[in-house]
Length: 193
Image (cartoon, rainbow, N blue to C red; front, side, top):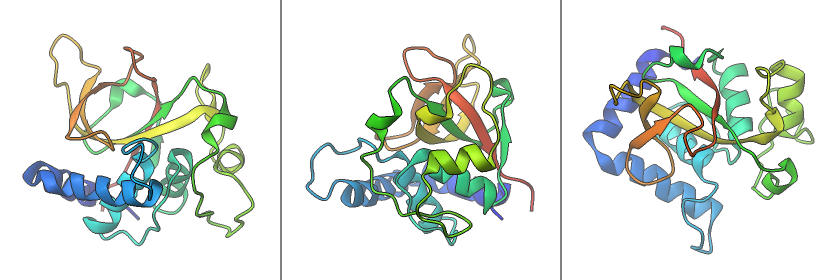
């Protein structure tokens, strides 16, 4: 089980030492892009995986696909799905919908990490069978990004803007709405210890 206290520990580590996030990003880049090209592209799930492994000491294998990591965090580590985006809290993990055909998202390495050990199943098939329907208007086949919410309400006039940590450099602001970025589909939330 992944607890709120463990997520708070991860947030504190990232806030206190910028090298914590950069180290996870570097490990993710080295794994996803061993040729050293296209750094920070397609590394969100791997970055979060390394953060959870290195800081929280979660017995998790690195993961390259956002949807698969979302499924693992829900089914193996007890995170709860929150569909009400306005209820976002620090420590939530955002899962983002993308407006791109799913076949263009299938070029990432896949560790085949599923609870039943069936490595033939894709993350999308696993989600369809185990996580139920997405909110109306959202397509689970288009999941493409995952991030950690560090702080909420960072802009008084835009309550949807949060401070997040992901594979794109230092912690930065992001809206959970579609403000020139792909919209967040749902959040994952750890339970209390």
